[in-house]
Image (cartoon, rainbow, N blue to C red):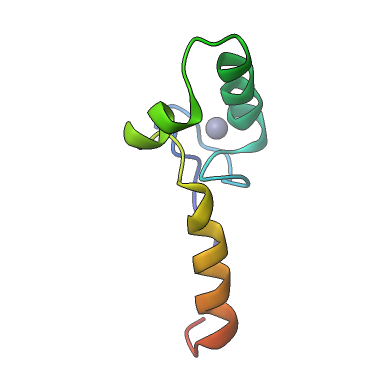
Length: 66
Ligand SMILES: [Zn+2]
C-alpha cells in the first residue's frame, strides 16, 4: 500500500516528495518559472521536505515495521 499524491484532487500514487509523477512535474515547472520555490511549497505542505524520504527510508531499513 503506497501513499497517495498530496494533491487532494489527484488520486495517483505518490512517487517523489509526496507527489505523483505528474504533479511533481507541475511543481518543477512552477518553481522553474519562479512562481514559487521549493521552500514555499514545503511550508505549505504541498510537497514533503527533501530530507523526509531519506529519513523514512533509513527508518524502514533499520526498523521492524512493514
Ligand atoms: Zn498528483
